[in-house]
Image 1 (cartoon, rainbow, N blue to C red):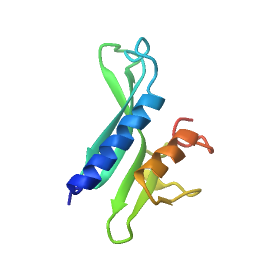
Image 2: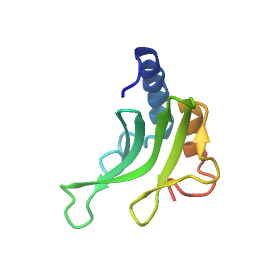
Image 3: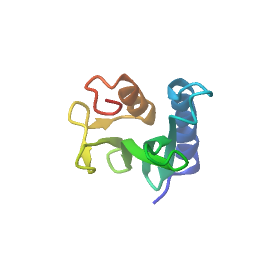
Image 4: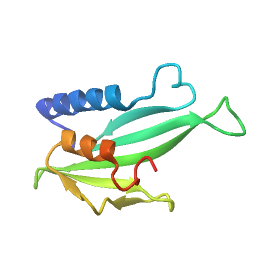
Length: 115
């Protein structure tokens, strides 16, 4: 199931605001960048950087994910652990809005998302 048109616009606006605040400066982006991908009911933040031994190839590292649960009208928040599996973000396992999710990721109080 995908977002309604109104929900999609809200997500798109929040993604744009997050990227504007969090992306590195333009001159650094070839070496480190952030993208946000929306798929179904999930929004995923991914860090992109050149591969160490093959700089012409990019490596994508998932940072955070939020999945919208329509029944509860909440966003479940996940972070990628070193076992390369998504785990619930225990300090704040849910958010009321996509904006709140991006605020939690930006604050990164426990160093789970960006280390």
